[in-house]
Length: 125
Image (cartoon, rainbow, N blue to C red; front, side):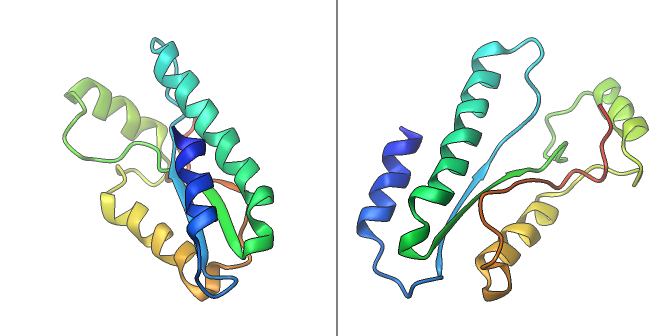
């Protein structure tokens, strides 16, 4: 489904060359959840392949791994563990991810293509 959606975007894109963007959100949390991890791994590879497949249209494609974002899903134990693993000493916010998406969509982000970007506060696994 991901590839079909990205491919259709490329087919329908009529914007100014250099302004098209594909941005996927991924995760490296795969332990204990093989189907989720496999789907995210496929998403990563599909998006990175799209960076080459769609470049002639002026479309960039990148993947963001936002790390642990504080959206209320973490138990206290998970939160404490993640905080100990993150050099910045805080969880990420949805706004942290939004800032990176905003940059990638801006003219200043047009040279970034085919990257898996970690925006995770330096989280060590």
